[in-house]
Length: 386
Image (cartoon, rainbow, N blue to C red; front, top):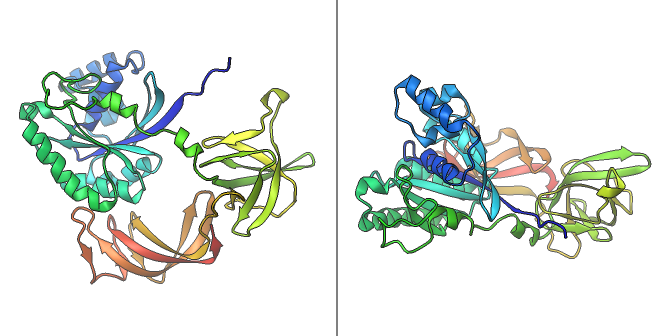
């Protein structure tokens, strides 16, 4: 009998600096035996050298130098396993100076944990991170209210912080699936339910994580197959790429966008007979040959003829977080990367500039967007794109 493919989930962990997100992850790894051999001993040695107490947070730092500085600078990706699925946890920086790294890490995730200190409550950076999750379209969010030990596991404090975050995040179109109280340092309500918080009757963090939607749900969506490249091999033209959503099979009628040309899938390419297959699914990189020979190029999008078509246009209304050292300006041209395509765009207009920490919008600076500002912008491309 074929072994069932395990589900996968990429989940980013964000939060205001020192709200304890790395400690929460470290404790999760420790409790599930996901730590590499010798990791704990290494951290104990570094802690002794620096004169700091041992903390599980340091298990996540990629380099000893980062551990000695006591902050997380680069996004760190950690393999994580439970009985239900395989995880890639992305530990993103909480410091304002490292927001660019936080965005880069979060862009690869399909779920998020937003860590908030129960004692300090919702901070500016907490709000900014919540807004970033909204911009990136991450809808599967848990708000983890950490350091409950510092407030004596008080239910009223938990409800106050949860209410404060709910009031801010709901207008963004993000509805957290759960608000989970924990103590990363004490290990309360991480892997197992806490007897110190009998008022909380929902699942502990680890169990709740296993209930987040995984990659399987991407398979049920309409096919989205961006062309990465076209290879000539023998007498075949192999169209290669990664299936971002949906599924495809030999014989399917497909549409290649933005041209709208239709054809059928003849084969899925393979190296050896044992690798032969007739279907491909979301998350897989595949090569296909088609019945009709068109001129195909990197950046085009393949969908099924039987499913809804993508939007085709040369004008886009986008929400963006600007990370350039020089301001984004109306009338200036830039390069836009969308899936595998890269096109030249011109900033037609800026419709809104937003303070990401307060959600206040500005109407007096609509000619440019500065570093770390959020804006709504209309972009124009030379040609239509999918």
